[in-house]
Amino acid sequence: MNETATLDVRWFAGAAAAAGCEQESVPLDVGATLEDLVRTLGARGPALTRVLAASSFLVDGVAARPEDRLVPGTTLDVLPPFAGG
Image: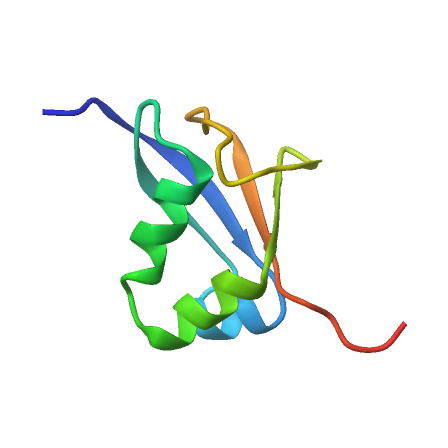
């Protein structure tokens, strides 16, 4: 059995609409990567999967890549593409 902790996820704009909330704490297996978490979150439904596929991610304000390991207790920001400029 994997050791689990939590990670705070903040959803912005269309990601918040797809997730149904603006912020939540989600369970995280210790040693999980961003890609692992995105796959788990995307299993909630096709709308969220589409948003996650197009989103950028920040971990405690720093850009994150799919292979980055997530640390429990940090904050993940999910930033979908924004229109305008």
